[in-house]
Amino acid sequence: MCGLLTAVTASALPTVSPHSPVPVQSEVLTPLVPFLPLAVFGVILLVGGVVSYALISFNRRLLERLGVPETVEGTAFERSVRRLGVSTVAILARLSGYLSFVAFVVVGFTTLGVDSVTAVSTVVVAFLPRLFVAAIVLVVGLIVGDKLGLLVDDRLRGVKLPEAGLLAPVVKWSTVYVAALIALAQVGVATTALIVLLAGYLASVIVLGAVAFRDLLASGSAGLYLLLTEPYAIGDRVRIGDVEGVVQEIDVFATHVESDEEVYLVPNRRAFTDGVARKLD
Image 1: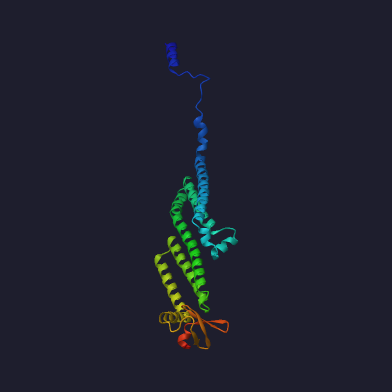
Image 2: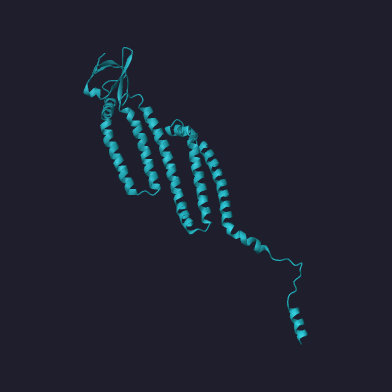
């Protein structure tokens, strides 16, 4: 009976051949499991680097085709960044690429499974688009401010009044100030504070402008009156105060009078304060 039971038990057990394969796949992969998040993080960084480089190259070519280098040429911002070995186009293109790479880095950190890092990464990802828009607004504000300042300076170049030289910087920095306020609004600064700052700035500009440009405004008002009523015209011989000669040009702010091979630029307000004498033919 014991021999029969031993035979039955032996036949019920599986026979293991010494040449049968041993399952070792799980044993090999198990030590690598803790390193999988790091591997995923590395892959995300690699993809982010490639995408960011491609984005920088694409945006650079796009900005060049849109004529941005010619538009910003000669501005103070372009000259400043040129001294640093870069250009406005390069800065705009790199901004998008760098922010894109930062977004990939933040997403990569979420794969590491650290709760605190994940929470911070979520906040950063939500904040990056606003930061990008704020940076673009600030750069564009600096460029537009420079262009407007150059335009005003070019328009007023022929006006030989001391106050005229102050108008271009006021226009430039006013534009930059408004752009800075918009940029601050993008990154979450309180709107009420921005409105108060803007109102205070506008009030100060109006007050200081009225004081600093009172002679210029008076000349402009007088110039409009002279252009509309035409008490004298180009070619007339006039005397304005102690200046006598032939009128060569009349603009909003001044009258050009030629006398003895010299051209005098007479502010139009002097036509009211000193009077005008026109010589009859």
